[in-house]
Image 1 (cartoon, rainbow over the protein chains, first blue to last red):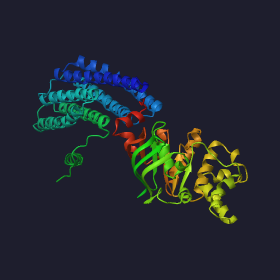
Image 2: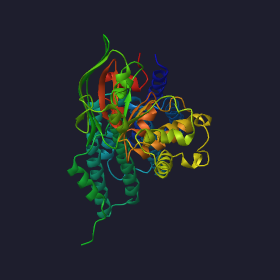
Image 3: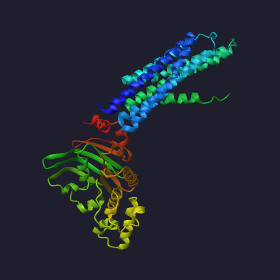
Image 4: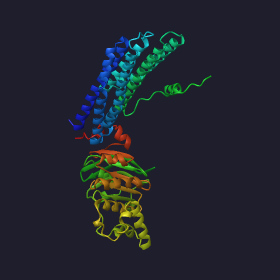
Length: 232
Length: 249
């Protein structure tokens, strides 16, 4: 076995380990939110504290590989994709922890609404994170592409949560301030979906040498959505 | 626009076929790199571009090598060809004479006698080879007293002195230290504005850094030829991938 192959195998193992840790974190965060389990939320925050260190370790390995081998072709794609992926994976861990912090700050107050859509978002983003890591491990282009597409479902769920909470505030029901917290939780799940999609895009890049592009029409629609709305 | 078009080229050294069915277009004002393991035929090919292989006994070539559309093996004057297609070798090979005479040697051979004209050519050639500032006060010194990197740039200046169209470089930096190598690489990139450059190199990072197109050769065949960035990012052939990622053999 060539030395670079041994080092790439080590990179692969460490990425898997990193991915598994973040997978565990988001799974537990989802569970903590649904069950309103403060102890579990605290556990997520504790586990998450080790994420940054693992990210730094992988980053150092990637830089060492670049320096020692000046890689090209597939090796360069795998290493550069790993460097980009770990940033997204770290953010997933970080935002899962943020979700738990918000939940803890609610101090056990009963939810103002059923968490039907947020629960679905938690399940959907956990699936995306798991599958994006699986796609990397198995070099599975099809699975990576399906993760990219699945992000649309998470976005739709976020819109439903938002509409639901706006309705709650508009109707003047009590404890409306909690609506803001729940909206932030939903937004964090939506961002986690984006990061999982990015991981899947880097998997596509490492296999094919170019990233998966969104259809132009979808890109334009998203850009328009992000533009400030003019008042009529 | 292509400077060279090589069509169905085969080359033999007596019974040994060193190149098999080479087809390649070499664009003008670009740097084209040939890479591959030792004995793959890349130096043989570059030497065919100014008929240096004519000097090898038993060398036989089939197919066409067109320079600006003209077959270089079809009744062309070899001296005129070598004036148009200059060459720089692996080991710097200055003549055992002064810096000035090294550069003036070619133009004198081609009939230029005017001292004024020769002075002009020497200055311009050394300037274009990015070594004028270092040598302007040492023109009468022996070229053999220069460092390896300076000698190689002097050889490039010597090749430029007869105003060629094409510069062939056969592993021009393999005998040089990293600083001299960097200077030659910078120089090569500057020169492509005025010249077409073909370089053989064993240093793949060098091919990535300076060339526009790269051809990968193996056992006398050209396995893959494309835009350098493409070849080193997404090679089409597994043999290319294995070679450039260092998993060859």
